[in-house]
Image 1 (cartoon, one colour):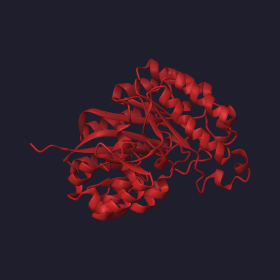
Image 2: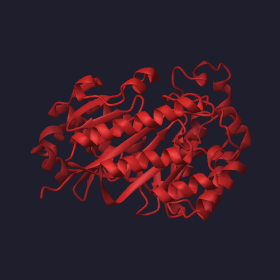
Image 3: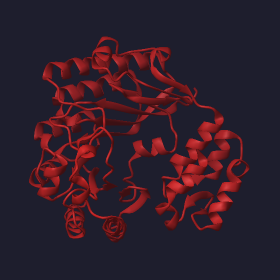
Amino acid sequence: MNQKKNLGVYIHIPFCLRKCKYCDFLSFVSDKETMQKYVESLCEEIRGFFQREKEYQVTTVYFGGGTPTILEPEWTERIINTLKNEAVFHPEAEISTEANPGTLTWDKLLTYKKCGINRLSIGLQSTQEKELSYLGRIHSYEQFLEGYDLARKTGFTNINIDLMSAVPYQTLDTWKETLDRILSLKPEHISAYSLIVEEGTPFYDDDKLESLIPDEDTERKMYEITEEKLLEYGYHRYEVSNYALYGKECAHNILYWQRGDYIGFGLGASSCIRETRFKNTDQMKEYLGHPWRELADREEVESLSIEEQMAEEMILGLRMIEGVSKEAFYCRYGLTLESIYGEIIEKYKKSKLLTEENGYIKFTKKGLDLSNIVLREFV
């Protein structure tokens, strides 16, 4: 019997109670009837894919958004049951959902546990009320604490907390306090990102924003303090913005960074299967009318050349603190890493931005700080 290939599954839930001011993801406020129809279409899309694709086993599932926890718990359960009925699951599959503190309830969390969700990623961003308010979050810090406590009481032992630095009204002291408060809760994983102001968001058009966010020197200190504090509490940095207790790294995100196959279900969801990248329509009416499509009917279908695949391997793989495995690169492409990128690697080894350790090419600490300069060379 042939061994099945590993597959990651991403499920996009585009609905929110209110869109945050910094968010440029495909998400919006909607009515209950549309949400229910959307769940039905999602299940149809899942069935259509797995009835044709039999060579995979699902190793990770990730509900992203939007706010996946806005759905009625029985709808989430229906999506997962559809997946489990149609696909072969790895016995230790990681099933994650993003969660907004303002939408977590006891009933939802119990349902999540019952249907197999074993990892929560809670979008907190800050513990400071003034910062949360300006970001446009729908919850308070107190609501987050209530939701986190409920999650622990219902048996969740793998929880990530998202935090955001360099946000309006934030100071070095309030960022330290946010880190200290979260570290006292002992989550298994912490994602710590800096605010990026994206075009098309309310923040992009906010004339006051520049005067409200920390200056570059303060942002730099926040970045340094984050790693220092998290290391002190036993979290290891395994990716540019992600820290985990050992054994609690996010398997789904690692699959992306290591260029594994993944399928995206839902509105605007992206996929990469067998070196072919494609995405779903971002028009709700079109998606509800025709959720399951042959590859030829998908949008932005792109077959990646070997050169493009190798470049992605470097750009994504170097996000990992461990770096890019020379052995894995050779096994995948039949070429040594040095034969393709030797000149670039040597150049940045000499400038102390790249190094080699245990058969991996990786960034030095200085290299991580200047990573964009290096990564441009691989494009």
